[in-house]
Amino acid sequence: MVELNDGNFAEEVLGSAMPVLVDFWSASCVPCKLIAPAVEQIEGEYAGRLKVCAFDVDQEAEIPSRYGILSIPTLLIFKGGDVKSQIVGCVSKEHILKKLELAV
Image (cartoon, rainbow, N blue to C red):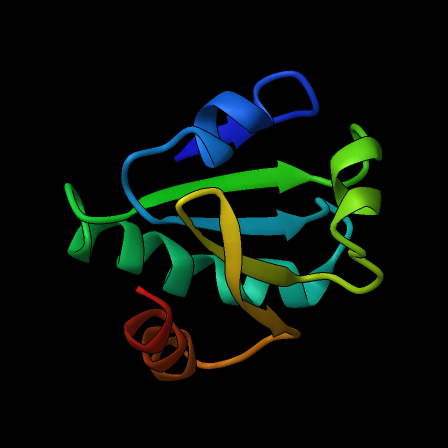
């Protein structure tokens, strides 16, 4: 999983040829830890078709602020540099997959 920060976000996400799932999280966030296994499974299942990245909101604030991240976990699905879908909260893997299928 690619670790994002304010410095590499544009290259890794906005410039990606593949759709990108970005997990905005924090180490102190229990729901973030609960959703992490589903995100990791999706990364493996969609290898070569979807880039999965993580952004620790405790480390940097510019990008989370730009995208209005007010609650974590928040997942944003990007395609062609644009946000195609947003998922907020601890949701099931199936919910994430449905959003991915609609967005990409």
